Structure formats: structure tokens, C-alpha cells
Length: 537
Image 1 (cartoon, rainbow, N blue to C red):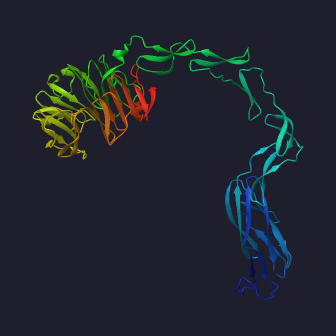
Image 2 (image 1 turned 45 degrees about the vertical axis):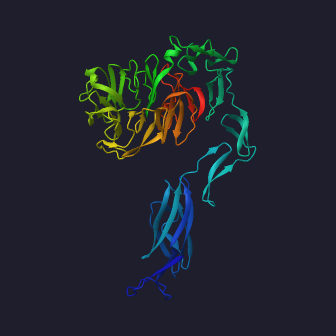
């Protein structure tokens, strides 16, 4: 597009354009816009701006001074009558980015403007001895240009080379130091590197070693006693003279120290009581020891175990432990927190509830250490729960329950159930004198799910599993790989069985490492999704 502007030298003429053949009027013409395209930083691109003098006399044209463009022409520019001149304009970017400026042209009182548009891009990079990146004005981008085949070159790790197909080929830089125990290589700048050679070991009780004199890899034995495989309660895999062997644990009586009489499974830990009366726990946390869930706990003597993040334990005839998220306490009457009943008055402990000699059921919040809430003030012989949900059995055989799924503390109320309930094997279930299993079916009623012979029960996720005459069963049905079961323990997707021979086996998820061994002695056999894996670590 070209624009014509005419200026009259007569004072009475009001128009800036001349329509008639006036020899004294000035009229010039120039493009309204000039596009330069793209140009890399550090390079330049030129375009011509054609200026036409439509006047009948010569004119003198001057140009403005834009910031990003340079006019490469005589200043002022003389154009003959009815003449045409190409003006060279250059764009040389110093930084990437789009540029747009207005260039003014003045001729004897007449002004024209032309918009100059260009884009600066980053300089083309990437160059070696046989190729380089250049800017293509046609493609408006950086393109690779290769050197002719046969052209001399030197490249990374190459000397006295020649270009072939855009790459430099020649004699390789020599980095061999003559040592078998180093791996020699040429670096990106042509420098040599000599990394130590890594020699493989023959087995877990060997460490790889390199012999420079012999020029070969060898293996050396690790220290005796280093663990080299799975361990269990009675044996361990250890290194001796460079070989992995099985050795008996010193001072361990398998029939006493590696057999269990009680079992409990909680959300983070599982615990077992040995025939010697030791309580051993495994599961979440590297600091778990024979002391249990918290390292500050003291477990002594035969115990009724509750494995969880908070709760109570009777660890001997005259000793109770209690713990929560703020720590644990064990000991005699003086060690029981304020507001808890005296040790001598406690006749039953189960999780986060206590039953006193006077028949009170006192429940405690499972998270912290409150004073406790007396939910039933007499007549209780067994109970389990916290302030939000639970169940209790009174001496007259009546069953009382509170809470449910609401999570809001409620008062216990009598519900329909067995008239001769004698124990609560797990929260929400009852056992009668004949071993019949009753399950909490509604806020006001218990339903009998097994009629006789039940000795243990546990909730495995949404399943109620129980032991009837030594065989495990589940509702809904699930296949369990055990027989001769003395007791079940479960939490969410993990279930463990204490077998009649005193061993413990588990199956399910390994979340919180409940299938893993923590500590020196406890290593129950376990199953991973129903497949036996022996003594798991």
C-alpha cells in the first residue's frame, strides 16, 4: 500500500494534497508498513523503503530516528522531479522480542509515516567441527548446515579428523592409563577420566574387589556375623568366612521363647505373648522393641495384649500399662494417671476401657489422656469400648451397648441378646456359655451367627472371622490357610492366627510392616496374599 500526500505552497490552499498540475506543490509517496520478519540477536536484516516524488520539482526528504531501526541512506535524501528512490533500512536486534516503530518522512512541510515491524529471536546455537546452526531467511528459523565431506576437523576425543556426513571421524584420543582397575573415558571437552572399576560380588557375604597387579576382579569376605538372609525366632542367616550359613540364636529355647500363648493385632502393631511371658511386638516404626508400641512401655510377665495406638494392658497380676499419643505409663497404683481407678480395683482391661471390682465400666478417649468417663456405674463383668461406642455384659446376663456409627457419645442402653453372655471376644460380638457367637445387628438387638464351639473372633475388614472347634471361618466367606487355630487377631486388611502349636502366621496387606519382623527374636511365619513366604523380614 502506498500513501500520497501533497502540500501546497500557497497560503490560500487549504488541502494538503494537490489535485492539479501546480509546479510549486510538493507530493511524495511511501509504503504505510514495512515488515522485516525474524532476525537472530547479533545479526541484521535489511529492507528497502521506496519513496516516490510526484512533484514537478526536486524535493529533499529527511527521516526520523527510530530506536530499533537504522536508515542507511544519505540524509537529507534528494529526489528529482517525478523520481523514485529505494531507502535501505536495517534491523539489528540486541535482545529477543517483537519490535514495532513509526518512521517519519518529512519533505518541505509534508510528513509521511511508515510502520516498521520486526522480531528478534535468540541467536542460533549448537556448533561442532562439522556442522553449525545458521538462520534461514526463507524458513525463518535456525537450520543445521553440514561441512563438505573431507574437510579437515578436530572434535571431542578426535584428532586429525575429516568430516563425513556432518560428523568428525579420525584418530581417537588415547586415555588408557594401563590400569585394569580403572575405567578410562574421554570427556565432553576432550579430557580423560579414570573411574574406579566396580567389581561384582559372588554372594551376599562377599564384597567385590579389584586387583591391579593381577589385572582381574576378586571377592573378599565381609565380617563374620553380618546378616545375609531371613531370620526367625530360633535361627538366623549370617555370614561366616564369606559364606551365608544358618546358625541357632544363642540362649534361645525354641519351645519357650519362640512359641506364643496370646495374640493381638492393632492398626499399627501386632503383639504376641511367649510361653516365657515376654510380650513382643512388630509393625510400624523402627524404634519398636520388646517394650511394645512405645519404647517407654514396660512389658513384664503374662499379659492380656491389646495392640494399638492407645489402650491399657494388664501385664502381670499386679501391673497395668496404659498409653496414648502423649506417652505411656506402667507401674503400680502410683503410676496410674489421675482419675483412673486404683490398680487393686481393676478386674478387667480391654483396649481403652477398664472394669472395676465394683462393676463400673470406665471408658477413655483413644487419642489423649482425659480423666475417663464412667459409662455404667455398677454390675459390669466384662466390657470393651471408648466414650463413642462399645458393649458391656452385666452380672445378670444383660447386654448393654452405646454409640454405633455416629461418633457421638451416647448413654448405654440394654439391648436384646443372649441371656447367658459370658465374654466379649471383640467389639460388637459376644460369646455365650455354649460358645455361641452373637453379633451386634442393630442399636437394640444382637443376632446369633454361630451356635456353639466358638472360642475366638475378630473383624477382618468387613468380615467377621471366628474360630469354631479349632477351624477358622469368616462371614462373608473367605478361605484361610490354617487349621488348629487357638486365636485370631485382625485389623482392617490384615489377619493373624495363633496356632495350637504356639506359632503365629499372618496374611493380608503389609501396610505398616505388620508382616515384617521388628526386633531380634520375633519372626512369625507369614503369608503374602495367601502365598506362604516363610520367615519374612
